[in-house]
Image 1: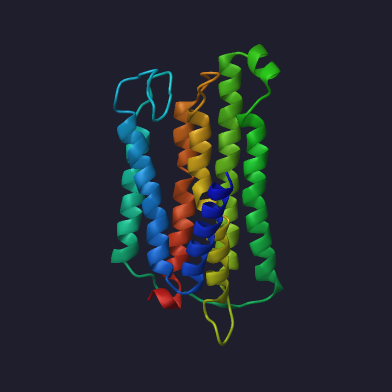
Image 2 (image 1 turned 90 degrees about the vertical axis):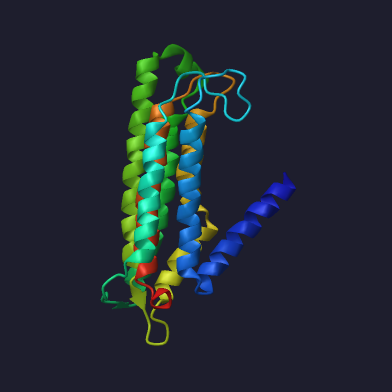
Length: 236
């Protein structure tokens, strides 16, 4: 357990340091590419028939693979456009307290959306046994929609916060926002949520279709990372 925590901390700091060092386009490509690989892996996995003895991911009902494959294609297209097209010149703003407030609000909104949605994703054992499957599915869907809205709003706030700069450093806030985002591993949250909605070997209560919707939160996250990276002067 300690080794896993150390590895997690090391990778977080390593990716954040890459952003801080100016390797912005490369780091963004790696993060978005990871989303492509995860979506593709799940899509290919669900092409196989259901098997309760499956060792990789116990899922107890047939899961459509096309949402995951479609998400992988969209993310790959976004990544290709990231390298093929350059952004038009953007108007920077002088960094002030407003940008740091937007930064705090963005991260706070992201974390709040995750914790509030978890109240709908993981009901208590008593409620799970008493409620019907349709009722549980409705609550999980509501929590997932809340999560998606929170991620979109937080990405917008973080994007607005990234526009601050100084005379000496025109990418001050961009590097800070991207570094913190990477250190906190917020780009991996959609995958974590989808995994938790899929993997339930004890109760066999899973929501594979809603998991695909949760994984689609990679879209606003990738859009935020790509657009912010394209506007950096070091990424030109």
